[in-house]
Image (cartoon, rainbow over all chains, first blue to last red; front, side):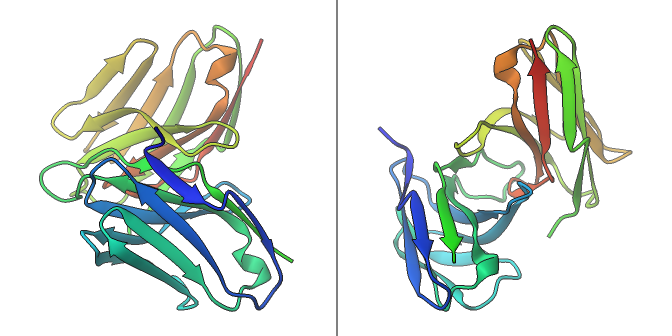
Amino acid sequence: DTAVSQTPKYLVTQMGNDKSIKCEQNLGHDTMYWYKQDSKKFLKIMFSYNNKELIINETVPNRFSPKSPDKAHLNLHINSLELGDSAVYFCASSLPPGGLYGNTIYFGEGSWLTVV
Amino acid sequence: GENVEQHPSTLSVQEGDSAVIKCTYSDSASNYFPWYKQELGKGPQLIIDIRSNVGEKKDQRIAVTLNKTAKHFSLHITETQPEDSAVYFCAVKQFYFGTGTSLTVIP
């Protein structure tokens, strides 16, 4: 059973298009994330939702919009795609942050987005 | 956010040797420091973590040390094997990741 699953795994699209990446987790976690990994392997958090509420929103263009229909799903919509959006996007989940110590983050397998 | 620096960015060792990766952070209130391993074509996976109430933690060939005063922590891999080859990330405050270290273990 895949704990964090995201689709599609590969996506090639033209500049200016709008695309979505879907994510689902079956771990029963309340917190979900989207990360972007660029060609240099830098892994940067984009968004985090806790029980469908946005708790982290790093400096991300507003062309990127996360949507959480329920706490097991966090989809990423990208409008007006640009060449610089080409990257691997990882969905992840965990128990809620905060408290005295943190919790393990479980990552999906990644979605390879190429904008041409 | 949190500023997390990780060194070195690439590391090559002979099989059987040790590998050490170091991270520094800026927020002295940080109290959770996990390490993740990312194999080619996969998402990162937790390999070990340490909380601020301990200075060292060991799990077989992997150990992590934490120096809260100096605000740095390190991953130590002993008796390296080819399957240890991967990209390793430190993290702070659960979700802020370091810049990654590409480890190659040469058979």
